[in-house]
Length: 640
Image 1 (cartoon, helix red, strand yellow):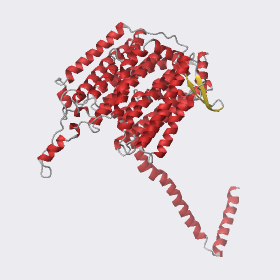
Image 2: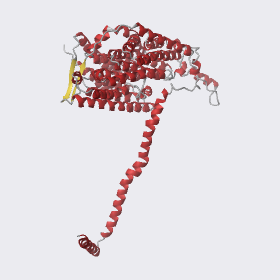
Image 3: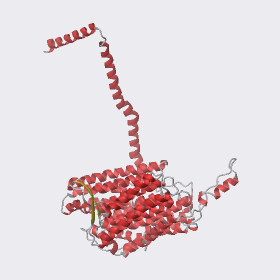
Image 4: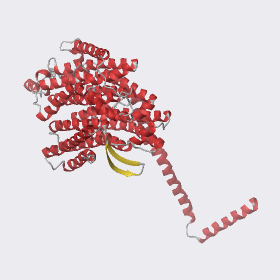
């Protein structure tokens, strides 16, 4: 049975739902909005499962569907192969769980319909990105993903912080897209096609110089680094946490920020030849893994800790891709989508308890009030740390093994150190949120207009003293993701992930790797050391806990993210603002407008002068003619 017709449906159904929900958002009930929005993603997921079953059960022959064609310049189509289906299953599957979670988390919001329409639009954009069979279609999906990110980060558009965060993300992604589009333009200039098969087939036959492919690889890397929040284009990610928690889980953990990983994996024939660009990918990933883990250890916003954790984990994926371990990178994407989405959604339950307060210094003791959130968050955190038998252990071990087996000792050391820091910030986060005594807000002294009884009543009924029951629609997706955070690693490790992804890399010799006891043992040992040090510092009676919770304590360099954002502000933002102010306040009104106004004044004065001769007196006209004759005669007498 030919299932090619399902590929356009996977992409189009969420788009149609976005349009319908967006149009009827103010007239439909929230229940109907929920059914339509979640149902569309469920349909896309079911269709993806059906296509995947035929693909992997029918000899791994790619399933193709054409969309439209305008000659060789723009021949758009969709393809279902090992790589695209691997990603589409996560996008639609995790997307469905997060949509269900959103029905409870965002159900009371007045703009619920607008939110769900934008979430549907994102699913459309991401499926278009991963299922496209050419660079042009992927670029269209890439741009739509950026638009969806802008709309969802700035969902609370009345908040100045959300406006700033959305603009920051949009600008940084535009910088990345400039590099991506330039790279795609060079691809067409060198190979005369946007089609993956045409371009990669030409490279396999030796077309394209190494220098050209290195340039293309670096340009594509600019787009990948910006979209995946890698150094040095990472500064938008922590501010993107201004969006609702489901947005953080879907876009900034499970799918969108990993799009750069997909781009490099898909373009692997380019990087196989462009060794310089490939090593650049690896080093950006390695440094990003270390940088993100370090900064996460100094944050106080629960979602920012997880955001920098995402930066770090995507760094691991870039590291693997740069070393040619594409299966390891895509496997880590797979496990990371589950445990990081679980962490964000469990964090949403935590924030729900504290009426939107995301400061972990205002938490504590939640283990005794919400055991479900603590257990699911803990399971996902252990997967993130990479302890066996949790999912992250298996996928991270493959990345470390790639660096170890290739003798990339500097990158291997960086990756192992990042593993230790991952354990450090996760233990710190879990301890400050779930263990110890509950935070007690300071009581304001009673005054003339505020009695002591009222102060005590406010304190007793404060946001930090009231427990909220978690709706089932929020619990079930978190529970499923927590289970996948435990089992997805060993379930797909080795044979199954290799069978699923091997057809996407036909030119590479792939082998199922067993767990290397040296690499795995060293990784686990370093993680245990990092976790124990963090436990000593941040346990309920830890040496550092009181200082960390002191509201008068001044945060240091890690909290300020190594001042990279400040540096960018000095180097780029302030000069750009100064130039804009110079143009707006001086050059435009006095320069450009001055020239225009000056020409107008000159025309007016010349017109006034000439108007004096046009007075209606015959003698004036005779005098003018006489003067003209004299000038002509003088010209011929003296110059001719």
